[in-house]
Image 1 (tube, one colour):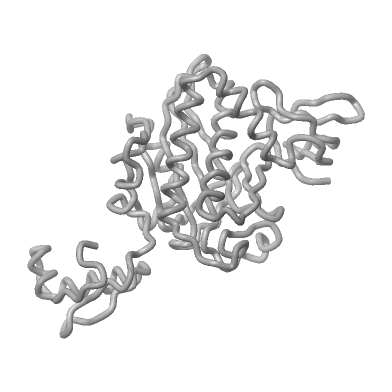
Image 2 (cartoon, rainbow, N blue to C red; image 1 turned 45 degrees about the horizontal axis):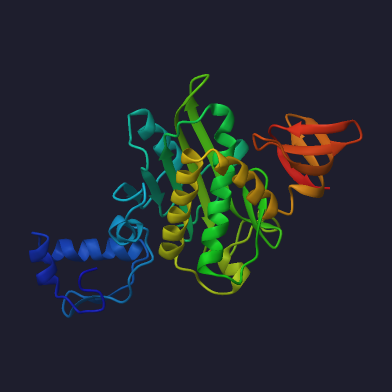
Length: 314
């Protein structure tokens, strides 16, 4: 990175890392296999053709100065699940603001036990550890705030995109899912020990599996152009930092989150839906959020509160 676009000899690199040219060649091949665009060979030297769009701490940290995530980034080229890693680290005492980022997940998880398709270096697969002074009943507000943060970050990097929020944890473009949020917590009856907020964003995916093709999209598919994952990740974490600081510091911010989520979502009010949860179904028209952030649906039997489940348009 210190010599980007400059030809550097294999001998010089070997000296810098206290190794030999054959080991440099092996490492260069490994980098190429991970998608880093390196030109050249041992006889002529190597050149980093462009700064790689990898979510490396060395690249992201300078962009996150002053946030709770500053200096707390953990990067993996391949991992089972960033949420699983973050939950394990939180249980061992990882500090608030710890961030787990992966280029690829082999067992990415979504809400309700669903898997998350995690193509290598195509999306953002990110989980953060938070330790809010909140009762467990208010953690849903944190999920809604994360949705607002994702929306703000996407619109910041590409103002052409019209982003919709679907309760409780989906971010949509053109009616298709571009991002999902998985919030997991460890709590006592009256207080939260820690929360892990996992965020997956489809950024530069060019296709999806047959089962997801009609339901999922990416920023690249929606806009027709490639997006910098580094720029979007920085915007996401800065936006999440702002939302989180307000939520834990100001009582009024909780009502503001409910209001803004309602304003920025076409699903919260006036949408004909059916809700499926553990074999049960609710059908009716959405009628806002209650004070805790749960969706209310007006049915033939009156107003019902949705505590969990999958919401689909009827």
